[in-house]
Image 1 (cartoon, rainbow, N blue to C red):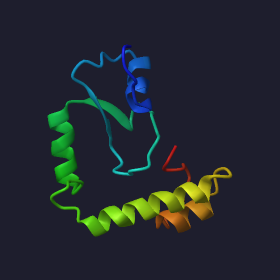
Image 2 (tube, one colour):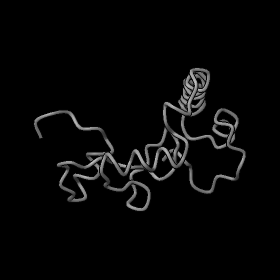
Image 3 (tube, rainbow, N blue to C red):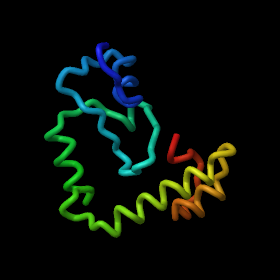
Amino acid sequence: MSRTESAHRFALLLDGIDLAGVVAEHRCNEPLCVRVDPDHLIPSTQAANLNYAVACGRTGIIRTSLRRQDRHARSLAVRNAVSGGWDPIAYSAASGNTAPLDTPSLF
């Protein structure tokens, strides 16, 4: 590997995926996600990933600068909430996710 790879692309590489022309596509739409299991992180093309983003409302056309600021603030709040280890109550409060968390959505 001649350049730095993201953790998600590296996970695909470890799974034997040829990374030429491949992007790592998450199926959750969680900006902070670090899950790499095969049902959650899939090899895709840039075009397919962009189509999925549009279908899910994750594009710059739809997002406003206020939403980007909200996302940044949410990222910081979640980082602070889990900085001492996984805490489902603190994560729920910081992320706005009030659903029961059998499996942490970030991991």
